[in-house]
Image (tube, rainbow over all chains, first blue to last red; front, side):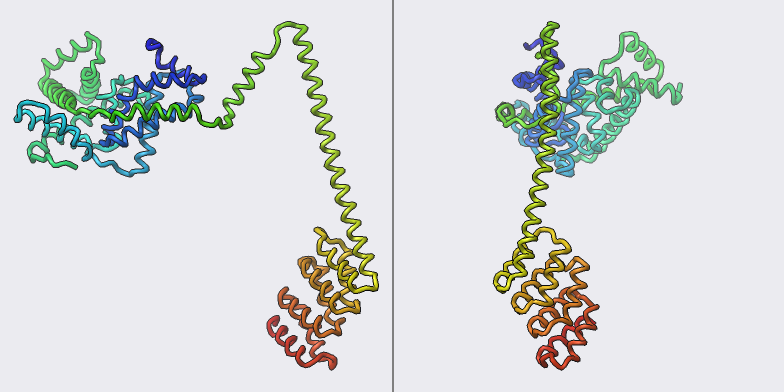
Amino acid sequence: MESLSDNALMLKVKSGDLDKMGLLYQRYHQQLYGFFFKMCGNGSISEDMVQNVFFRMLKYRYTYKGEGSFKTWIYHLSRNVFADQYRKNKRFNFSEDMAKYETNIEKEQNQEELLIEYQDRILLRRAIGQLSEEKRELLILSKYQGLKYDEIADILNCSAGALKVRLHRIIKELQTSFNKMEKEGNYGIG
Amino acid sequence: MALDNTEKNDYTQLLMSFLKNELTDDEKLALLKAARENQELARELIEVQNTWTQLNKYEVPAPAASMDAKFQNMLLAYKTRPTKFSVVKTRQNISDFFKHMWPTHTAARTAMASLLVLVVFFAGYWFSYQKSHTAQITRQYDQIKELQTNMMLTLLAQKSPVERLKAVSISQDLKEINTSVIEALLNTLNQDDNDNVRLASLEALIAYAADPRVREGLIMAISHQKSPLVQMALAETMVELQEKRSVGPLKDLLRSENTPEEIKDKIQESINILI
């Protein structure tokens, strides 16, 4: 059963075998959680949004045609869930959930390395959090979700070429942002 | 050598694909060769790759352990929820039903077709029966209405005021009023010997005041009244209905020597409001 493709599993769910949704959850929940977490910076909201995606998959299973890529479909649903949540919350606060990082850091040995690592993470998180919603989404889809440019182009409904140019600009913007924050020693959170 | 815009754009695309390891070996070699020959491109490649690598440090904390349990609960709740009507599902079920139930054997197909013809015939018969049944109910309703009207008219002709009051009461039960009922009630209002019966008929007529024939009749009834009670009730009714055409007949009552003084005050008040 593990070898069944995502598409085949979803078609089984569509035909009434709802238990197959469990396998899709196993395959995708971490990935989607990562997507939402990087988009909003809040763990519990991200968990809720993951649940919501799988609920919508069940609810709208009749609309699944199995023609395109399953991954593209699930990301379309996820983007809609995020847009609804975003409309509800207006703007997410990127300063939350840092405690979880701190817990991880405490386990490390070298105190100096630990501090540098911690500062880098804050910097990175802050720089990504400062990007516009649209730019952050493109960066996350390209860098962290294991999607190819063609798949992202399909999800965002644009050409792969245009997408690469936009991503290049985002990287340059982040670069400037890192340099500026490093110079200012700006590790403040939020 | 500086790169022109087209070259920059081409290399940007290659660079981005290089970052995600989406270049063929030949494309990779071509890009690296170009970077060796062009300092600007080499610097760009190093900077962009550094930033891209720096992004690896963004770790996501693990979701709460309860997340899986929440999903299982949601799935279970969804599976055991009461089924709602779904157009798509229903359509699919009907389609599946015919797919599975339609026989493949010719004789069986003929039998199934005959059965369908019979079903259609009886359905048509049933609808036709329903239609005639509705018509029958309408006829019965008309008959009852006619009976009530006749009974009311008969009772109005009775000598006993109680019977005539009953007649007025029946008129109030009628959902639709016809000309004969309006005329009977107006006649009662104008001619009945008993004031209570006149007042009851006035009450009954007010309910149909939207009908212009009733309004007209009420205005004309003013001059027929001798009873101060009915005169006062009519004056109040005219105010309620804001019937300015009644001012003339009401002024006639004011001028009449037979109208008691206290009633004249009330009528004057009504005229003042109407004017």
